[in-house]
Each structure stands twice: as C-alpha cells, then as structure tokens.
Image (cartoon, rainbow, N blue to C red; front, side, top):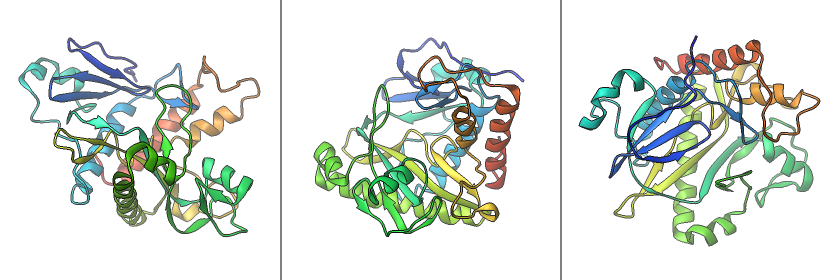
Length: 292
C-alpha cells in the first residue's frame, strides 16, 4: 500500500500543518489531508496508508451532520474551482475546498470522560482547566456532565490548557461564551450519534474561525480520530484506558519506547503499529457507515 506524505501543487502554499497541506485559492482554500501522522507534536517518519482519505471522509461526514448547529467552512469535494480540474485524480478522496476564515487562537476542547492531560491535571489539583471536579474520580470515569476546557493553539511546540477566563482575554467574553455553547452542543451531538454505534466519545477538540462578515464557522476538522478520543463502549471500565479507535494506539506504543524523549526526530514505526493505526481508523469510519 502506498502513502502520500507530501503534496506539491501549483498553487500558493497557505500553510503546511502536521497532517494537512493547505493551498490558497483566493477567497477559498484547498485542504489536502496527507497520510502523515503525528504524536507529541512530532511527525512520524512513516505514514499510514489511506489515513488522509479516512480523515477527509470522517470530517466531511461530521460537517454535514452538525451543520444545523453551527455553520462550517466546508464547501464540498464536487463543486471545485476550474483551476483544480486537472488534479482530481491526484486529490481524489483526500482534498476539500473550504471558505477562508480568520482562525481564532484557541482550541475548544470538550471532555465527557477523564483521560489524557485532563486526568493528569485532575490528579494534581482536582480540577481541569480551572473546572473543579468531584473527588475520587478514576481514570476514564464519566464526568457528571461534559466540561469545556480550552487550550492555546500553538504554531510550534505544545498546546497549553487554559482557563475559560484566559480564553476570554484572548478572544473576548462574548465570543468565548459563544464558543463554549457551540462546542458543548457539538460534543453532545457527536456523543449521541457515537453511542448509537457502540462508541463512547471521551473527548474532542474543535476549531473556529471568523468569515469576512464576522460570523463564526467551524473549521479545520471535526470529530475525527486525529482530534478525538473514541472508546469501544462494551470494553469501557473506569480505572483503565479502554481500547480506542483513535491515535491513542500510537501514543501508547511511543510511551513504551525506553529511549525516545518525545523530541524530533521521531522513531520509525514497525509495520504492526502502522497497520494497527490504519485498522482502527477504518473501523471507526465503518461503524459510522462512512465509505472511504
């Protein structure tokens, strides 16, 4: 199976992220999801076959499934500008055209269960991003209600969990409150639809931008296995990390390596890990009835 780790298209490069190459089409952007995968802010040397196509299909599914809650930047894969016509075969399944926005400098994280950095914060002080939680919670426990825990969006290095008050300083109180309301509604929609498929949406992150008229749009990706923590509901047991259908499989492998300090260069991935990631991403897509 081949992988696509990079793109080189004859359009101005708008941004090259850890996974996506973004090209400037004037008032629109072309987002191409490569097969790159990252963990701990490091891009792995090996790509994951079909990953870009899986992410694009899953994100497109969720943009459509949540459009009634908040408008998004998704403009589809069919009605492409004429200048893209010669690249359809190269970009098939892994590229979308979106509206250009002014991205807000925060990530909107919603947690329904205690895991990841939230679990570490809770162990240290009984709260997550300034949100106090009941005493005695265990790893992977369901929270009394989903909580909104924003983070900075770092161009380089690690994102940092912040309080709602700090977020309000960055984007303004009115916008911060709107982001919290929308993020919680999006999480509830995702969690409800996941539950119907035997999956728990433990946590996820959303990103938003402002269009030229100043309207908030959901941007980047939505409820993908790169941006979310999905657990198998029938294997969930508080006190331990349940089997997941997301990037946690990769993180667990990297954490098991004795010599890597989570700094570049990232270690090479064995074929079993590459295939394990691919299988989990495909399993998640299939459970939602998403064709890749």
